[in-house]
Length: 172
Image 1: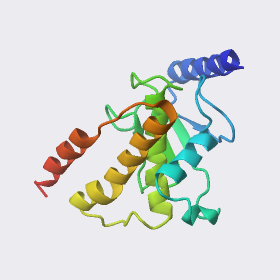
Image 2 (image 1 turned 90 degrees about the vertical axis):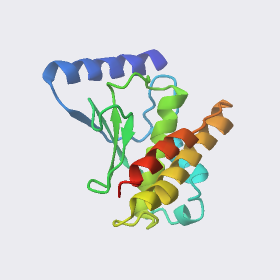
Image 3 (image 1 turned 90 degrees about the horizontal axis):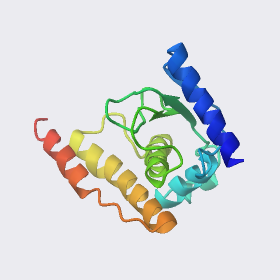
């Protein structure tokens, strides 16, 4: 089964590059990438580690997002969520992190936390730069770190990333 999924992913990526398509919408229900977790499993982890267990008892507020696999949405980034297209999570296939790896999966969990923050009202549209770091990014990085620690026994220190982001806010 894993070989079949890897073959499908390779075929999709090959067709993406050859036809110069910039995105593939995946309406996922139980698709997993290589030997990794399925998208619904990762969504459950985002709910758990992002602190959305109580609010997501109401399934209307916490519906599975659409994952878009594309060349590159944000230069250098593996994943992205934007309130301009709040039903999508974008994942880059040009980033060196491989599908199905813990780092790849943890990035999806991180972006799903942003998705949940938006749809549950925790992410306000006019959020300041420093609030974006403290109230949006920090909880998503914490969920990502908890996912890596509890599922893969892997330590993830995101403090330097938040520090660099806070320096960028000083010009605001």
